[in-house]
Image 1 (tube, rainbow, N blue to C red):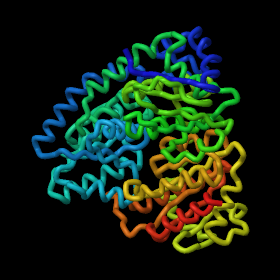
Image 2: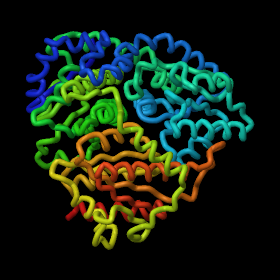
Image 3: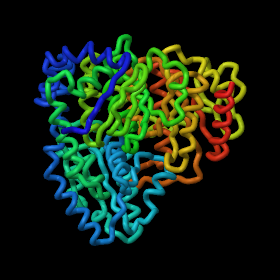
Image 4: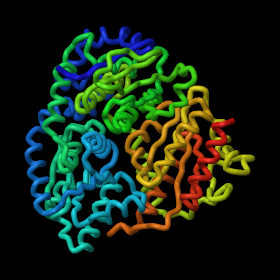
Length: 539
């Protein structure tokens, strides 16, 4: 019996009552697990026909476990017990939550910030192996990391090929190139699984297993959940949660996800990329808002477009108060549950949950910036350690940082959200995350926080393709550290700057207000910005 439970109240319960009987009548659950690709409409059929391998990924992936364990043992025999994963989006967020929950070490390199890259390269290189995860191999972040690791291993007198493990799609250019290069191991994943649904494929399992996770137990959790989630029944928890996510009336399209002692570390971050990238398109979608203990949005009466979702311990039996949903279960079971629910929500929203039509736009803009290498746009204002940039109509009349931030927040519509984006070393500057509750307090509106560039591969889709009600606070920084990318005519510092520039350009082209702050000194700039936001929150 699965350990899963979904507890509903208020608007969440009404949404389930309204939609689940129809989903059962249409046999949505059994058709989903039979990989029926026709359930999201004719326009989605081509993509969905190639993206439903996740429903039985735990079964398909069983033979990988022995191979991964054998590789881990062979590494251990050589004194290699530290693993770095270079990946983006779902292919990095799934292993991160899996390993953190299991309490094993995995350095997840999902950034191009030169400080973070350097930390991955230089710490204990003698006992390190790197897993390079990319469906195509052409993702700029992971290709750059691969090149940097090859150089770092060779510089340390280590045979780089013996320390590199690749996860990719079968037959991809990366697949053949890695084999030709003689890399230690090349794992191929089911190509019918998109990145954000890939937790139980080689993308999720290889780095997690090498780090020491009990993969058999994890897959057992998924299999147990699948037995109940495939049933066409009104108590099917995947149908219930999906109806809550995509079926409230009027649509509560900001889903505040708060962990309340679930025991799963970082699950909300994984769910955020799954839901945002899957649903944020065609002008609609569900915006996941990952919140911590300090949740200003829940202290006042909850707004009519907001739905709280609580991740609770498995022994919880009481439904949440107000218009809310509470979810409990083991890690593997919850991963499959939320994937099923996302597929359900896509149907109710009338969109294709398996494509990401707006993700490529930021990549294209980044490539253009790197190719042209234009001179930096002059700052409109400089206040202390902060250079301030933005459209002329946004900053008209602003004379300092406080006024610039207020000008951005004044653009926030009544049903809007604030997106804070920090292109930083996320392991060193965790205090920047304090900006989220401060802005939420100042505005009374849902506020998200994303580390760049990793959010470009997940919530970035929602920012461009979802409802046009967001305002964007982008934070970048100068750095005394920079690193060359071997064989590439730009550095990591230039790359992360180009990614920020490219994304801001695309957001502005979509009519989204963007305030761009560049900190000329990280320490004083972060302190200055947080002081300003604290003062605004106290008004």
